[in-house]
Image (cartoon, rainbow, N blue to C red):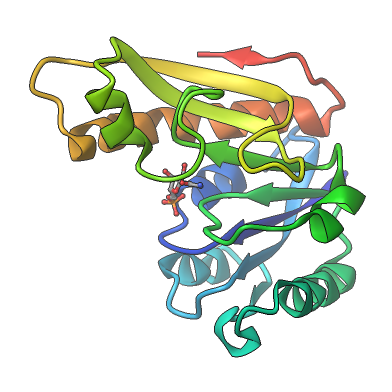
Length: 195
Ligand code: GAR
């Protein structure tokens, strides 16, 4: 059985979709939910599900990313995960953290990568006049929102869509895609998922 740690920063709806799928014949179980933000709503959702939680606030570290990442590593060492999932974790992780996790660390991003790395993905898809939009789960590499794609889910962009309406429809797809990818990935299958 693989052990999965999940990093969040906010509401944690993707974390919940992952955790709630990790039952029965799923090849993994959650071992830690960690947030850089003590107010993250996802922490209570994880605790209510009996999952150990931790907070590593980035702010006391100032701009010292290496020290922040050392504190993250200390929590991971205690939980001993096999797989690390970023699920709305809004801090950039540098190569010194990411490289040792190569091939064992996933992220979900709200665009059809390689389009729209970074922030404001829904507004950017609308501004570009895209006919379709969606989300991507990928392996994490040191370059932001790069790394091998493990799955994508697509939605049509409708006339009258706003960034908020797109975000809401993409989020529904995120909650389908991420669990589907993690199930395969934890079983050693990196065949991309297409929804
Ligand atoms: C999700 O839409 C996720 O794709 C996005 O943040 C949201 C978190 O929601 N992630 C990023 O933008 C990462 N760059 P959640 O806390 O409810 O899962």
